[in-house]
Length: 298
Ligand SMILES: [Zn+2]
Image (cartoon, rainbow, N blue to C red):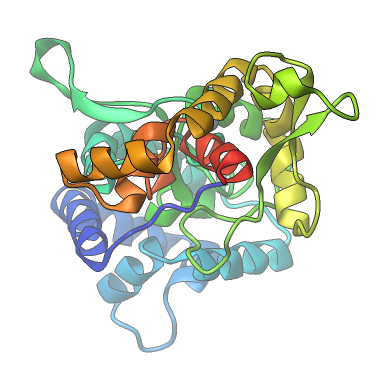
């Protein structure tokens, strides 16, 4: 639902972490595995290309390139040799245990990109170990597509709930690293009755929370269904009431004095009052709070 914004600096940094891990501990063996497996080699090494360069390019494939690899694997129609697949999945486990926290920390994610409802974060845990409190979702599953089990941008930092939901289902959604495709998903409220004055004052729960279905892409529709996004947000009526009350309470005069006192811009003030951030992955429910705020803000 929420794209992972990766700046040039962040991209450089996470790819450096990744390649340092791979080149220091696994490169020689990895190249031997590629050399010994014709199917994998065909995907990675093009004619006359230096093998190490080709492997680096492959493992750092962006979302478009990953989609092409998936199509190539589908066209091939046969499963990867079990020994090779096991090797790749074992490298993934090593990466997850030793590097995922560093990468998640550079990306600065604190909310799951699929649901924006649950926390994920990296930090020091017991015994001083740097840990990642979240899961890595294989955008293209590691059992169906072991060829991409270790590809950096196939590994999406997500919450445990979404990872579990997605692991059992076919997807057809957009890779959160694909920054070209914007999600059209928007939350809003809907009346049960024709008119309810108490609701408009934040005093009644006589409304439903829904997702605006107009103009959604097929990917958005699949994402809503896959992660059950509408039902997972339906119970947040108290948040909506709070936003309605705040949008009435903070009038122009009050806001002006707050902006001057704390030296805030319009957008900073709105973000603080209504509990969202410009990058929705900086705060759980940021997207939800933002959409509802837009609905009630005059
Ligand atoms: Zn989630």
